[in-house]
Length: 433
Ligand code: S3P
Image (cartoon, rainbow, N blue to C red; front, top):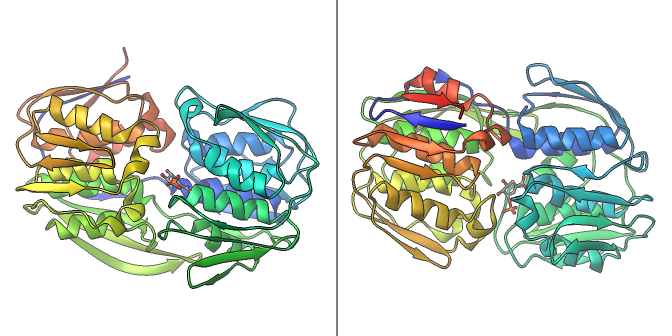
């Protein structure tokens, strides 16, 4: 499936993008190991979160089919999961495999987690190392999936200093900590998304956070609850960028999660001169939510603050599209984590920007982009959903047609992206080939 985009246009109207991916995964995982019923609304019916849902069904948890983002989970308690009858395939989803590795390390049964070609290349040593220190036995294929997790191990609590700023690793260790004897704690080199901590608290599980140390006692219990998942700021980001670069745009994104550990994209775009208003800020189920109004504004190149990088990690491809439309140079450094996402996002973005005539220089941990004019051209997504959606937005400022090839993976995080984009004014056509 490919996107063909005619150049020009502007983005207008009011839309709500689908639910937050990180929270959707966690709602299924925590709801499954809670006692009693959990109801979820705003669930992201994308392939990644649905892979987590299927895996927990496979382990005997009763979860209703999502209907317009609403579902019910009959929690089985911390020790109530059943051995899966087969290998659990979580597709493209790094969040599923890394968080589930922690949760499964403390079970009485063996399990195997695998995924698609992209996931089979992604590094898992980052979770295997701390989980092994806790007493887990996990084998991998040279540090990559499939992961074979041996059951019946008793886990001991550890303190772990995370070598990389990764919410997935932090969450994996904390989830294993639920099953460990004593207090498990972690410190992070820089703050990362804290949905696991917030949601555990929502399930009545005490998580303490003191001066950068996050800890919990094993052996407690989670209590079923109601979870309202806001729209995903990572999906909103494509529209924040699109409306910022396209003259005449005035777009409102409704009910977006603006957790401080996720709002780096707003900070960065505003520093570039973007006109983003945060309206109706409110708390929904322990998470801050707001409507975001974004209007066209001329952008200027900046040095992206290194501390904003983990807070905008999934939004950086879209930010680089903004950089290409900005006046002057934008410098992104300290972003080596982009190399181990669904594709090597530094390489994928550099290739696509060059394809559209934008001068750029690749660094081991980032990229420098010189603002210019997009030509038309053909973009290779490397099967990466965020590369596809980022370059779709480039058409708003291109001089000719853009073809974005292999866009099927957009469905992993953003089902309905094409329709919603067309509704707001993007000149996009989906071609099945
Ligand atoms: C996620 C954490 C991030 C992010 C991913 C989702 C999560 O990964 O890129 O899309 O839900 O915890 P890292 O924690 O590995 O940076």
